[in-house]
Image (cartoon, rainbow, N blue to C red; front, side, top):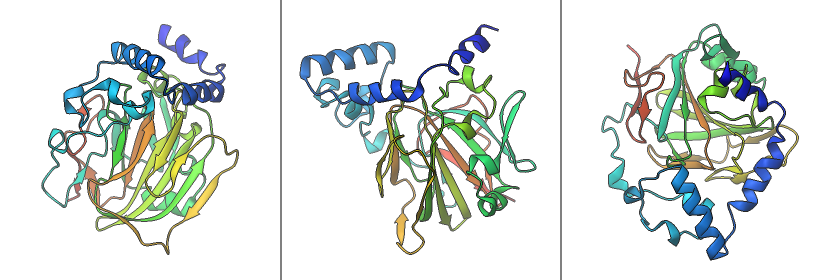
Length: 282
């Protein structure tokens, strides 16, 4: 009951105003203030600085630069089997299951349609209706760059404005259709293992999302924006960075029936970038 009451508060919060303030605050470069913000942040969210290329937290020019810090390559070894998809982020598994009758399981008592997650794209929804999904949550202490599970050619991207509900587990458990209501960026790739979609889901305090081919994508837009890359030949390699969250959120990976989630990918499991996410279906 307590968690349900806490979750209900998010219906009334000014999501975008709070996130705008975070956008500004996370980019303060005045050293005394910036260092104080980083000190408070790391006290609340312990970070493993020995994994970062720059281990001195105060060497970063802003909280946002610290938050999107690069890691030492050796700290995240990649699964060696090229036929296996890599986990694209650090974090934990919210849910990972088969997509049933075009619906995605969110939490006990809650699911949502693939169609609404994909902003009404009927053709794309039909492609994944018998596939699998993994919803991957990034906490504030996690590494926040997003990498490619496999080699892929970018075909399209769609920006969808929406709410910015928290994506912490207590809100996921109690706010219906949360991931289909929040702001999100839908990236569609063609791969050797079939079509793949990566949905970057915004959340409160996520001051911006960005991809390497577009740059920052903020919540200023009020309408759905579609970007066609079918003639651009944008190819990304397995393990290559594809985007990042400027403060934390969630990634949803969609695969067709040609791929199934690895046995290590199950609800509440801790995950690391580079471990096996999905394997070819039998």
